[in-house]
Amino acid sequence: MSGYAIQRAFVSPLLARDRAREPMSVLLVTLGLALVLENVALALFSADFKTVQTDLSIATFKVQGVIVSVPRLVGLGAMLLTCLVLYLFLTRTDLGRAIRATGQDREVARLMGIDDEKIYGVAYGLSAALMAIAAAVLVPFFYVHPGVGTSFLLKVFVIVVLGGIGSMPGAAIGGLLVGGIEGVVALYLQAAVAQIVLFAIFVGVLFVRPGGLLGVEQR
Image 1 (cartoon, one colour):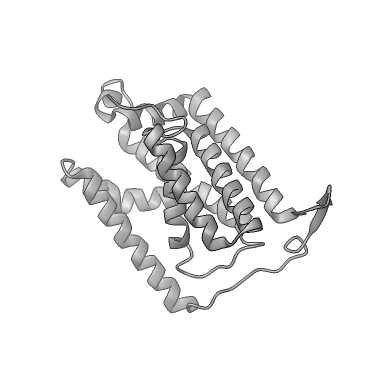
Image 2 (cartoon, helix red, strand yellow; image 1 turned 30 degrees about the vertical axis):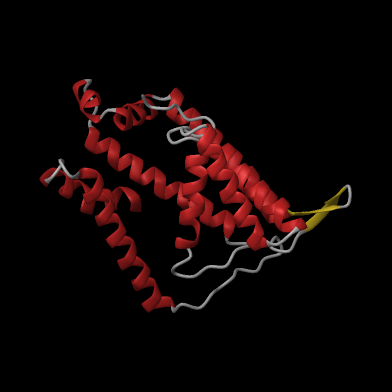
């Protein structure tokens, strides 16, 4: 509901006044809102890093001598299940098809009788729900503070572009690749080297496939 409320309160009135500058104006409004919320959280909860310790946080088991973290394995399962449910929703339901149609061409979708304002609100609400799922999965093994979201921005950008913008299976594959590359390189070398290797592979893939692994190149 929070995502839907934000869209109706801040984004929708802005689009009603100025659709010509929609991408940039929406970006600036949401960025400004994120800064406000982050600073409110700083004032209320301070900037201290916090963790949530549960029995699940330190649970591990061994597979052929390899130590597997239970909370991270749960995170992998949650990601796969969420992606599957979201994919089925977007491809098998009327509302999901309406969201995809509006994303591809809002004017044509409106001509087909789709209420684009309602669809934008649903999309914002859905994105907020997905973020809540991700946060719940991460909390048992990741630190929390008001600015923690910014640490994921660049990595999310790499994952989406690497997998292919607009491709949900591509985003899932991109996330698995990024996690696998970081884990393997950090295991044998260093975490800092893992970032270098990751971005080198990212640039190399874009040279070969500018649209990403599963993206469709625009001509």
